[in-house]
Length: 194
Ligand SMILES: Cc1cc2nc3c(=O)[nH]c(=O)nc-3n(C[C@H](O)[C@H](O)[C@H](O)COP(=O)(O)O)c2cc1C
Image (cartoon, rainbow, N blue to C red; front, side):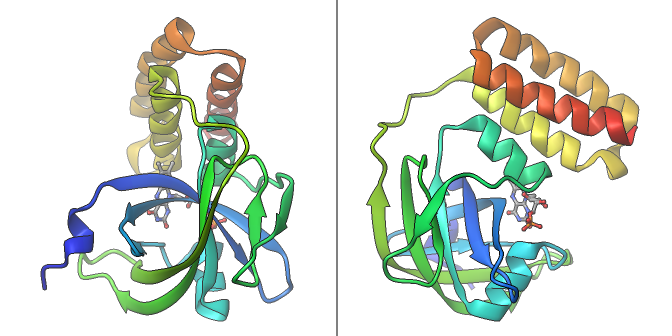
């Protein structure tokens, strides 16, 4: 079935969810950023998916902090947060903007992958105090590096390190300290597993 939501851009976000034990989790997720609904595809193995099934609520953040983003993709960051206003969730204080959402539908994806399509209604939103910076090649390079690193087991060490070397050049040319730190985080993650 064609759905207008599947035509809007996929935006890379950090999603906070709360577990059965009350612990707040940050996961990097690509989200179709519709109005007033969003849709995303968490893998069943992620904490984000388990928490969404348990509570049906989340806070979806836009951030230009690439270090936070890669940590949410490859690790378990604990940034400063405050309670959300309309859901029992947590807002990352340094985020540029966020949306509090309630899950309306979870359906197994039809692409053969172990993930589900999660549709959610935006019930509140907010913006941070720091305006977002514009496009930055080094940030995009670090995001791409984190995706490649997360596929290390399937791709193998050699192609991953070749791709990281290519992306490192962009970070060296156009990044600042935060982008370099994010890229170093990705490279450490890969080195520890290669
Ligand atoms: C750019 C980018 C996009 C991602 N999008 C998704 C996604 O749509 N669904 C998903 O399950 N994981 C996605 N991931 C991987 C998750 O961030 C990763 O599996 C993370 O460990 C999940 O965290 P959690 O287990 O704490 O929920 C993405 C990673 C990156 C770098």
